Length: 186
Image (tube, rainbow, N blue to C red):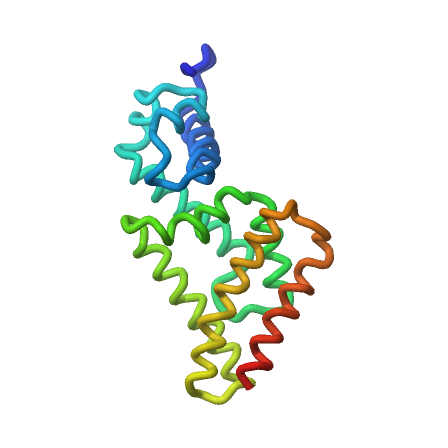
């Protein structure tokens, strides 16, 4: 598809490309999505893509950074309270493609492993500091601190993939699974 007759201001075109590229990459991941597919999704040419991004990798990294920023704004980055899981679900429902890119695809892409590794490490540290209030230091605290962030993001993705059933109940169900891990670790 080619660029429409209406020229958008640069910032608007860039935003349009980011939204479309997020959709395109969320279908197959970075490696299996070509720039032609991204351009078609955005309704622009490859030339237009290259006016905004130097490479496919730069485009993908921008999408991931944007998704991280939005997630941090919605959920926070440190001491998670009772509203953290509903906020995580809301953020995922608001932009399911970006959520899937961050937590399903990006960690499989070697080129972006630094981002996902730092995101995972931060989540484990937050979980550890919260769990340390109730679980003694040691291997079971480590186990729970590693498992809870993984379970939480996988639960949200499963919720998205199953059509976002019962959004008003989803947070409670995820909390119950987290509580089960906490109880098992004590």
